[in-house]
Image 1: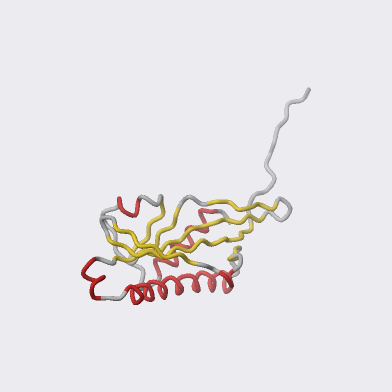
Image 2: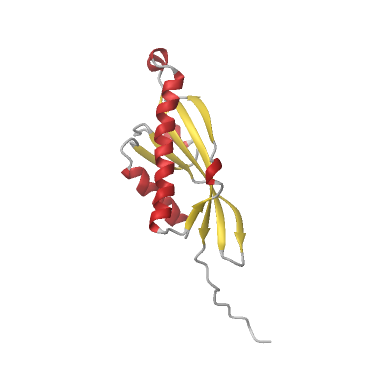
Length: 157
């Protein structure tokens, strides 16, 4: 499975989830630069890291950062406790992650979340143009690679 196929599957799930209204795949600064955003949204950091590649099994482990954002403007901040806002976004994120896990188990997709029993998230509040609440998960996803031996033509001596 390639990184393109993995991101495509994440996009498919995000578009099917009723509570998510937007999706951005890009650089972290783009969350503030894009004008047409509907919240809550899923942000996929395109700075993907390859944690390791097993040359024997042709498996690789991608490290992906998935961030769930929602608006938390000043009037709402005054009327709604931050714990309530966190709970709502946490439920949305967990629904996404459980669906992601369910799809690879049910459909036999060639990936697996590493340490799926200990997936950890991190809360942040961003006070830029959009006052935002953010929940970020860093996932390590093991994929079966598609790389086969290449064709090499060496000059004869």
